[in-house]
Length: 268
Image (cartoon, rainbow, N blue to C red; front, top):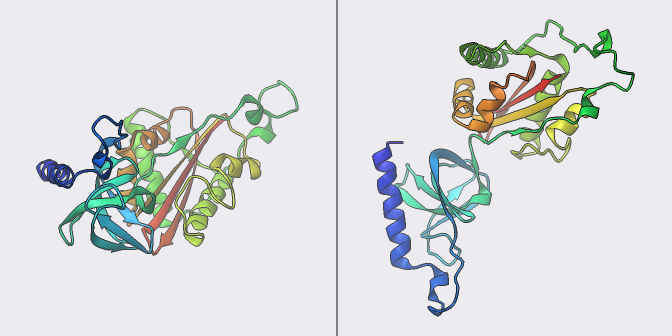
Protein backbone atom coordinates (compact mmCIF):
# COMPACT_ATOMS: atom_id res chain seq x y z
CA UNK A 1 0.00 0.00 0.00
CA UNK A 2 1.27 3.49 -0.89
CA UNK A 3 2.88 5.08 2.20
CA UNK A 4 1.19 8.42 1.55
CA UNK A 5 -2.22 6.74 1.35
CA UNK A 6 -1.45 4.77 4.51
CA UNK A 7 -0.50 7.96 6.38
CA UNK A 8 -3.70 9.70 5.29
CA UNK A 9 -5.82 6.73 6.34
CA UNK A 10 -4.23 6.61 9.78
CA UNK A 11 -4.65 10.37 10.12
CA UNK A 12 -8.34 10.12 9.24
CA UNK A 13 -8.80 7.30 11.75
CA UNK A 14 -7.09 9.23 14.53
CA UNK A 15 -9.25 12.30 13.78
CA UNK A 16 -12.41 10.19 13.79
CA UNK A 17 -11.55 8.64 17.15
CA UNK A 18 -10.62 12.04 18.60
CA UNK A 19 -13.84 13.70 17.45
CA UNK A 20 -16.10 10.95 18.72
CA UNK A 21 -14.12 10.65 21.97
CA UNK A 22 -13.01 7.46 23.64
CA UNK A 23 -15.79 6.19 25.94
CA UNK A 24 -13.41 6.04 28.89
CA UNK A 25 -12.75 9.77 28.58
CA UNK A 26 -16.23 10.55 29.85
CA UNK A 27 -14.98 10.03 33.40
CA UNK A 28 -14.01 12.87 35.72
CA UNK A 29 -10.86 14.73 34.75
CA UNK A 30 -9.12 13.86 38.02
CA UNK A 31 -9.72 10.14 37.57
CA UNK A 32 -6.98 8.00 36.03
CA UNK A 33 -7.88 6.52 32.67
CA UNK A 34 -6.16 3.55 31.03
CA UNK A 35 -6.03 4.33 27.32
CA UNK A 36 -5.46 1.55 24.81
CA UNK A 37 -1.89 1.27 23.55
CA UNK A 38 -1.47 2.35 19.93
CA UNK A 39 1.08 0.32 17.99
CA UNK A 40 1.95 1.19 14.43
CA UNK A 41 2.46 -1.76 12.10
CA UNK A 42 3.80 -2.40 8.63
CA UNK A 43 0.58 -2.70 6.64
CA UNK A 44 -0.40 -6.36 6.36
CA UNK A 45 -3.29 -8.25 4.87
CA UNK A 46 -5.65 -9.68 7.47
CA UNK A 47 -8.22 -12.42 6.89
CA UNK A 48 -11.51 -12.45 8.81
CA UNK A 49 -11.90 -15.75 10.68
CA UNK A 50 -15.30 -15.10 12.30
CA UNK A 51 -18.57 -15.76 10.47
CA UNK A 52 -19.43 -12.07 10.82
CA UNK A 53 -17.27 -9.24 12.15
CA UNK A 54 -18.33 -5.67 12.92
CA UNK A 55 -16.15 -2.82 11.70
CA UNK A 56 -16.61 -0.05 14.25
CA UNK A 57 -15.82 3.65 14.32
CA UNK A 58 -13.43 3.24 17.26
CA UNK A 59 -11.66 0.60 19.41
CA UNK A 60 -14.62 -0.45 21.57
CA UNK A 61 -18.03 -2.09 21.25
CA UNK A 62 -19.48 1.27 22.34
CA UNK A 63 -18.73 2.69 18.91
CA UNK A 64 -21.09 2.67 15.94
CA UNK A 65 -20.92 -0.23 13.48
CA UNK A 66 -19.80 1.01 10.06
CA UNK A 67 -19.74 -2.26 8.16
CA UNK A 68 -20.01 -6.03 8.67
CA UNK A 69 -17.30 -8.29 7.26
CA UNK A 70 -17.72 -12.00 6.53
CA UNK A 71 -15.42 -14.98 7.01
CA UNK A 72 -12.64 -14.97 4.43
CA UNK A 73 -12.86 -11.25 3.70
CA UNK A 74 -9.46 -9.56 3.39
CA UNK A 75 -8.64 -6.13 4.76
CA UNK A 76 -5.52 -4.02 5.22
CA UNK A 77 -4.39 -4.03 8.85
CA UNK A 78 -2.82 -0.62 9.51
CA UNK A 79 -2.23 -0.45 13.26
CA UNK A 80 -3.10 -2.04 16.59
CA UNK A 81 -4.97 -0.15 19.32
CA UNK A 82 -5.10 -2.32 22.43
CA UNK A 83 -6.98 -5.48 21.39
CA UNK A 84 -8.29 -3.82 18.23
CA UNK A 85 -6.91 -3.49 14.70
CA UNK A 86 -7.30 -0.38 12.58
CA UNK A 87 -8.33 -1.75 9.18
CA UNK A 88 -9.13 -0.53 5.70
CA UNK A 89 -11.43 -2.34 3.25
CA UNK A 90 -10.37 -1.52 -0.30
CA UNK A 91 -13.62 -2.91 -1.70
CA UNK A 92 -15.85 -0.45 0.16
CA UNK A 93 -13.42 2.29 1.20
CA UNK A 94 -14.41 1.71 4.83
CA UNK A 95 -11.85 2.67 7.49
CA UNK A 96 -12.49 1.50 11.04
CA UNK A 97 -11.52 -0.89 13.82
CA UNK A 98 -12.17 -4.58 14.44
CA UNK A 99 -11.48 -6.95 17.32
CA UNK A 100 -8.03 -8.45 16.64
CA UNK A 101 -9.11 -11.87 17.92
CA UNK A 102 -11.14 -12.38 14.76
CA UNK A 103 -8.60 -11.31 12.13
CA UNK A 104 -5.60 -13.46 11.26
CA UNK A 105 -2.61 -11.82 9.61
CA UNK A 106 -1.58 -13.65 6.45
CA UNK A 107 1.99 -13.81 7.68
CA UNK A 108 2.51 -15.03 11.20
CA UNK A 109 5.61 -14.52 13.34
CA UNK A 110 7.29 -17.87 13.77
CA UNK A 111 8.55 -19.55 16.89
CA UNK A 112 12.09 -20.79 17.41
CA UNK A 113 12.82 -22.66 20.61
CA UNK A 114 16.12 -24.50 21.06
CA UNK A 115 15.79 -28.00 22.41
CA UNK A 116 17.34 -28.88 25.73
CA UNK A 117 20.56 -30.86 25.77
CA UNK A 118 18.77 -34.01 26.89
CA UNK A 119 16.42 -33.82 23.92
CA UNK A 120 19.26 -33.82 21.44
CA UNK A 121 21.43 -36.62 22.81
CA UNK A 122 20.83 -40.35 22.97
CA UNK A 123 21.03 -42.01 26.35
CA UNK A 124 23.62 -44.47 25.08
CA UNK A 125 26.76 -42.48 25.91
CA UNK A 126 29.20 -39.79 24.85
CA UNK A 127 30.88 -41.41 21.86
CA UNK A 128 29.55 -38.97 19.28
CA UNK A 129 27.26 -39.73 16.36
CA UNK A 130 26.52 -43.30 15.34
CA UNK A 131 24.75 -44.62 12.27
CA UNK A 132 21.50 -44.58 14.26
CA UNK A 133 21.94 -40.85 14.86
CA UNK A 134 21.84 -40.03 11.17
CA UNK A 135 18.50 -38.75 9.85
CA UNK A 136 16.58 -40.64 7.21
CA UNK A 137 17.34 -38.86 3.93
CA UNK A 138 15.65 -40.79 1.18
CA UNK A 139 15.02 -39.57 -2.33
CA UNK A 140 11.66 -38.07 -1.48
CA UNK A 141 9.09 -37.22 -4.09
CA UNK A 142 8.10 -33.60 -3.57
CA UNK A 143 5.07 -31.90 -5.04
CA UNK A 144 5.63 -29.03 -7.47
CA UNK A 145 4.80 -26.47 -4.76
CA UNK A 146 7.01 -28.19 -2.17
CA UNK A 147 9.95 -28.23 -4.58
CA UNK A 148 9.35 -24.57 -5.45
CA UNK A 149 9.39 -23.65 -1.76
CA UNK A 150 12.59 -25.62 -1.15
CA UNK A 151 14.25 -23.88 -4.11
CA UNK A 152 13.27 -20.44 -2.77
CA UNK A 153 14.62 -21.26 0.69
CA UNK A 154 17.94 -22.55 -0.58
CA UNK A 155 18.33 -19.67 -3.03
CA UNK A 156 18.10 -17.22 -0.13
CA UNK A 157 20.51 -19.29 1.94
CA UNK A 158 22.96 -19.30 -0.97
CA UNK A 159 22.79 -15.48 -1.09
CA UNK A 160 23.68 -15.46 2.60
CA UNK A 161 26.54 -17.93 1.95
CA UNK A 162 24.81 -20.63 3.98
CA UNK A 163 24.64 -24.33 3.06
CA UNK A 164 21.36 -25.57 1.55
CA UNK A 165 18.80 -27.28 3.74
CA UNK A 166 18.12 -30.95 3.06
CA UNK A 167 14.65 -32.45 3.10
CA UNK A 168 14.14 -34.93 5.91
CA UNK A 169 11.62 -37.75 5.51
CA UNK A 170 10.16 -37.57 9.03
CA UNK A 171 10.18 -33.77 9.08
CA UNK A 172 8.33 -33.76 5.75
CA UNK A 173 5.75 -36.03 7.35
CA UNK A 174 5.23 -33.78 10.37
CA UNK A 175 5.05 -30.60 8.26
CA UNK A 176 2.47 -32.15 5.94
CA UNK A 177 0.45 -33.41 8.90
CA UNK A 178 0.52 -29.93 10.47
CA UNK A 179 -0.67 -28.22 7.27
CA UNK A 180 -3.51 -30.71 6.85
CA UNK A 181 -4.42 -30.41 10.53
CA UNK A 182 -4.74 -26.62 10.33
CA UNK A 183 -7.07 -26.88 7.32
CA UNK A 184 -9.16 -29.79 8.59
CA UNK A 185 -9.60 -28.36 12.09
CA UNK A 186 -9.98 -24.74 10.95
CA UNK A 187 -7.28 -23.04 13.02
CA UNK A 188 -4.11 -21.05 12.33
CA UNK A 189 -1.55 -21.39 15.07
CA UNK A 190 1.77 -22.95 15.99
CA UNK A 191 -0.11 -24.77 18.75
CA UNK A 192 -2.18 -27.68 17.40
CA UNK A 193 -5.16 -28.94 19.41
CA UNK A 194 -4.27 -32.42 18.15
CA UNK A 195 -0.46 -32.49 18.10
CA UNK A 196 0.52 -29.76 20.58
CA UNK A 197 3.49 -27.53 19.80
CA UNK A 198 5.69 -28.21 16.75
CA UNK A 199 8.35 -29.47 19.13
CA UNK A 200 5.94 -31.88 20.83
CA UNK A 201 5.05 -33.13 17.38
CA UNK A 202 8.69 -33.63 16.40
CA UNK A 203 9.48 -35.52 19.60
CA UNK A 204 6.40 -37.71 19.16
CA UNK A 205 7.82 -38.72 15.77
CA UNK A 206 11.19 -39.58 17.37
CA UNK A 207 13.05 -36.62 15.87
CA UNK A 208 16.12 -35.52 17.81
CA UNK A 209 17.37 -31.96 17.55
CA UNK A 210 19.40 -29.29 19.28
CA UNK A 211 17.35 -26.47 17.77
CA UNK A 212 14.08 -26.34 15.88
CA UNK A 213 11.62 -23.86 14.44
CA UNK A 214 8.43 -23.53 12.44
CA UNK A 215 6.99 -21.02 9.98
CA UNK A 216 3.31 -20.98 9.01
CA UNK A 217 1.44 -18.84 6.49
CA UNK A 218 -1.82 -18.55 4.62
CA UNK A 219 -1.46 -17.34 1.05
CA UNK A 220 -2.57 -18.04 -2.49
CA UNK A 221 0.89 -18.84 -3.87
CA UNK A 222 4.25 -20.26 -2.84
CA UNK A 223 5.95 -17.02 -3.82
CA UNK A 224 3.46 -14.93 -1.84
CA UNK A 225 3.94 -16.98 1.32
CA UNK A 226 7.72 -16.92 0.99
CA UNK A 227 7.86 -13.15 0.42
CA UNK A 228 5.64 -12.61 3.46
CA UNK A 229 7.99 -14.73 5.59
CA UNK A 230 11.06 -12.85 4.38
CA UNK A 231 9.47 -9.57 5.51
CA UNK A 232 9.14 -10.85 9.08
CA UNK A 233 12.28 -11.05 11.20
CA UNK A 234 11.22 -14.19 13.07
CA UNK A 235 10.34 -16.12 9.92
CA UNK A 236 13.39 -14.86 8.04
CA UNK A 237 15.72 -15.88 10.86
CA UNK A 238 14.34 -19.42 10.68
CA UNK A 239 14.97 -19.61 6.94
CA UNK A 240 18.51 -18.22 7.32
CA UNK A 241 19.43 -19.92 10.58
CA UNK A 242 22.96 -21.34 10.20
CA UNK A 243 22.25 -23.97 12.86
CA UNK A 244 19.48 -25.62 10.86
CA UNK A 245 20.37 -28.46 8.52
CA UNK A 246 17.05 -30.09 7.65
CA UNK A 247 13.64 -28.88 6.52
CA UNK A 248 10.15 -30.29 6.16
CA UNK A 249 7.53 -28.58 3.99
CA UNK A 250 3.78 -29.01 4.15
CA UNK A 251 1.28 -27.33 1.80
CA UNK A 252 -2.46 -27.88 1.87
CA UNK A 253 -5.30 -26.30 -0.13
CA UNK A 254 -7.52 -24.03 1.95
CA UNK A 255 -10.88 -22.45 1.17
CA UNK A 256 -10.03 -19.62 3.54
CA UNK A 257 -6.48 -18.71 2.50
CA UNK A 258 -5.97 -20.40 -0.85
CA UNK A 259 -3.22 -22.56 0.64
CA UNK A 260 -1.75 -23.15 4.08
CA UNK A 261 2.05 -23.41 4.23
CA UNK A 262 4.22 -24.99 6.92
CA UNK A 263 8.00 -25.03 7.16
CA UNK A 264 9.63 -27.03 9.96
CA UNK A 265 13.36 -26.90 10.66
CA UNK A 266 15.78 -28.83 12.84
CA UNK A 267 19.47 -28.68 13.58
CA UNK A 268 21.38 -31.46 15.28
